Image 1 (cartoon, rainbow, N blue to C red):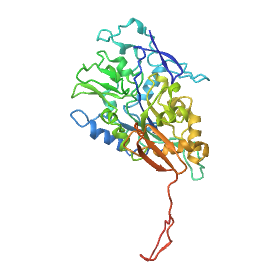
Image 2 (cartoon, one colour; image 1 turned 60 degrees about the horizontal axis):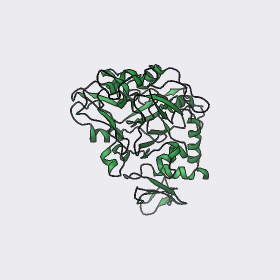
Image 3 (cartoon, helix red, strand yellow; image 1 turned 90 degrees about the vertical axis):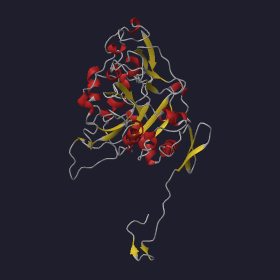
Image 4 (cartoon, rainbow, N blue to C red; image 1 turned 45 degrees about the vertical axis):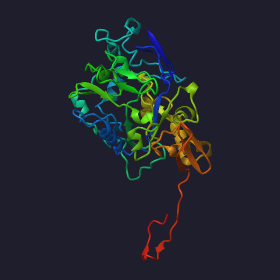
Length: 397
């Protein structure tokens, strides 16, 4: 049986293959407090990568409205119900089963090399969405949850009585990718140089076990091409030191791309490591599934913590409070605020950052400055009456 250590759940777990981490791991942080669901990220991905035959329902990037939206339909409800109750110990250790443990498979009895007759995917808890489940990418958009808001309802700074939030999603390029663990012909692999998970379409034999195994619904079968397809992490841009296409085109500037390390190897000068390990403000999506996903989310501060805890794990309340303090301008969190300002500020990958009295600065892998943003936006006050145009101004700042 292959036991691997998953730091997100705080323990060893079972997996079809021995642990083999890459030299560097592609990572990302999305700030959910700033996403406006403009779908610019979705369109930029689609026009770059998914515009051939059979691509109509291919959304390698999508934005869902939570709690009622999902693409494919019900992907999260389905897998959570299959795993049952998800208990976290007081020490942050996940006490339930991951998708690799729920079926009590003896992984050690399976051959190291997959084959159609020795199917690892059979031991992974999952399901294959119906064709119709892929047909409604905007289902549940802007549908709120919670109590009705009356004319005298007081909305506090933190949790709102009626709420929803947007959840942008791409492939998580997981450390323990279920799609790779379940492929009968090993057509899916994790690149050693950057941890990006790719699917070799020439090797794919259309078993669709990657579709069934990925609990996030990010391996998608193309019936015209007769093979599965998925997000490629924009690896050509990554090799050039740039950010993925959906990151560069994000209007809300909610995305930060970089390398992410394990906690004991974290580099606090690296943006993603700082947000995940130092500030602990960015959390993985459904860590209890066991894949150690490498896309992290800053949880929304207006949403009830019970909902967010089952989605992002036990660190939600601390992450929300840290974010509020940085947003308020607490001096202790100035470095975090500066880094949040740098998100989406350049097409180049920021590998190191610094925060001064006046600005936040981002550097590439060679130490070259690729971004500068002010810590405080400059404000100018104009005269109320404009002599030149013989008109009054309503907004003077």
